[in-house]
Length: 212
Image (cartoon, rainbow, N blue to C red; front, side, top):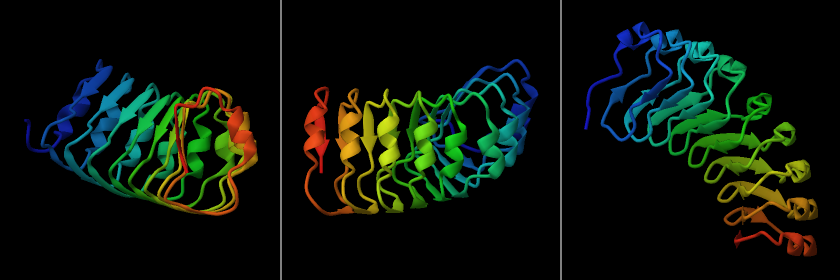
């Protein structure tokens, strides 16, 4: 496995479109010079020992469509500039120490997959996520989200996976979720939900896994 930090000179590769450094033992922070890779469409650094906040210069990666940073030690809130990336389709920040709210993700109108499992994100699950009409997978398990499950999520017609488990969500299961006819995986266990199982969930004929 490769060790050491991501060199700042990585920014001097102007033609780079894909960068894959996953499953190594790299440490340190992500250098600000990563923002110089303006042609980059794919960035994967899963399962390393990278730490610290994400650099605000990541907002300069205007062609980035896939971002995989799972299994590191990134921390703090995401920089506001991050939410300006226009072409993001798939994002995984699973297994880090990221904090703050996630309302900014509603700006990523091309998003297909959003995996924020096992971080320290908090606040309400934004109803504005219902604007992500291409979303197929929304996994927010193991964070510190509070409040109710937004019924507006039921408008995500392409959604196949919805995992909101192991947070501190309260209230009842919205019966509107029975409209998610493409749903294959619905996991809401480990929260503080109450009430009955909505009969409307039996409309989910594509469902393969149900965890309540």
